[in-house]
Image (cartoon, rainbow, N blue to C red; front, side, top):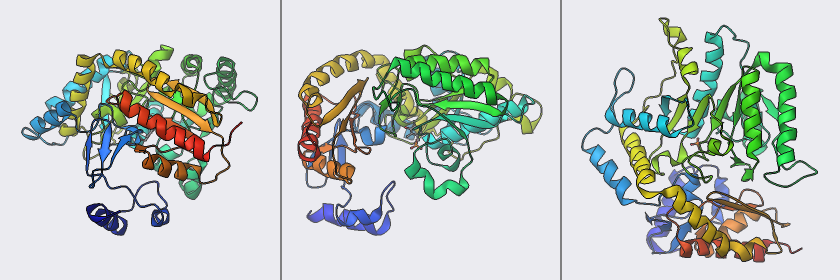
Length: 442
Ligand SMILES: *Cc1c(COP(=O)(O)O)cnc(C)c1O
């Protein structure tokens, strides 16, 4: 790696502690320097291009350096970059809140802002417990989450995240919550999106809530697909049952749509596919099109009313310095404009059909198993005996001009909506190289 690339990488390794990374592993494979982005593609300083097959950790929607989002942020910069939101307000945050309330499942009219997904989870957990305390039921303060759940990595969010690798080192800091079965891929049935599994898992949840709802504030779910534990898709019937059970047992339902929001699952939000509305609704990632850190928790009138009082202590007192940042809210409004103008969901549906056809030979590759798709997420398991599969697959994909970041043996494509047939074929080419080189046949 010559010149400008090498120089930036050396400075990065000396000064930057990279996320979710064993830094020593960079001795062998250094971080990839990114000079610029354009649409579905990223590029280094020597002009090597690669397709962003994971939408830069699932945040990008309309591609890199999108002219309309660029222009909106530049315009906002000339007016107001940021002002505190406690006691003050501004146009971008009001407009965004109004528009999100219209787009979200019905009844979610009160928007509370933070800057990242994990903080949205924290806020939803705090709101849920405080809601029951304000209602005179402080014993309802535990949270139910699913096997394989991922809701972020701050302490509270990690305490409802069921990914052992992320938890072990911090076990002493984590609150014990309650895990309930995931609605598919039981030992006897590995099928994703399986309906009997949804019924079975809902049955387990019903039993749990019958016994323990007096101490449970909320249940938190990732609608339609668990992302970080390996693109584990499931049947929408499960969500409908969770909604019914939560209502019946006085438990709030938190829908974490941080990854699934903004068209990723084929509908604007995953909840729509089950026809349900949660009590608390977490958004982040795609909300600014991958431009600026922003997250949001939408709450129902019922939740909001429990905090509305003369007593300060009954208010939701969570404070975050950058709440409702004007630049980020304006970027989010520009993203919503693009959805309105462009018939994006319809276009993605057409696109996904073409992409399915491009990927058809890979789907039946002998080393590829459990091929699946939901909206603009494709995933498959690779049969392999390599313990370093994920890292090797990443390196191999980079050599094939694709940014892919497998989770264990699960390879997934989560392309930006700017991805065209040619760019998707690059991802499929990289996936095929992975299956050919690292996979075991049969
Ligand atoms: C990424 C993610 C989070 C955490 O968001 P961060 O911005 O990374 O903190 C929470 N929940 C889900 C479902 C996610 O995919």
